[in-house]
Length: 205
Image (cartoon, rainbow, N blue to C red):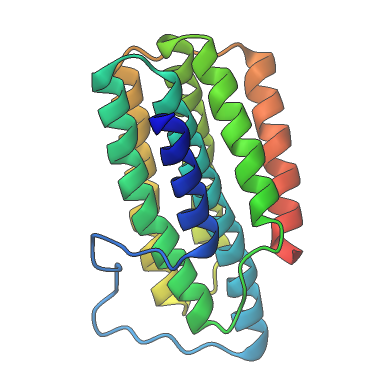
């Protein structure tokens, strides 16, 4: 019951409250951001996609923390979730600065990611951590493409994405040290396909 209440609290805070970061938002000192109308719209769409990714990360880590029976892994998942909360806060704040809204489908993305996290957790800790490894690898690659696609003058967004990319790599490495296994190629392909649907839709909605 306590875990269910905690999961519900996490969902409500992620979807309906203003996230608060424990770390300062990354910045590039002395580099102001000046964007044209089209550049602002393009940057906002990319940051909306990144915000969706952080909504999903909260759901995944919450579900996997619920599923594990290992106190050590539960603590690791909760630590990663706190760092992802920083990302959630940073991307939401950047959307506000750009005059843009989060995805209208965030409750759907959260529910789907939470379900995937629970399923992965039911297969045991090694599979669950393997799911984290593959997820974070794909997210890191996705963030790299955004570094290349963001307007060159959008120093604010680029600083946020760069720090997120470093954190995602650290999460993958932690999951690997915790005994995560390599997932089969068909599973990796299915994860990429699902992520493609989500990111394409979130770009607009």
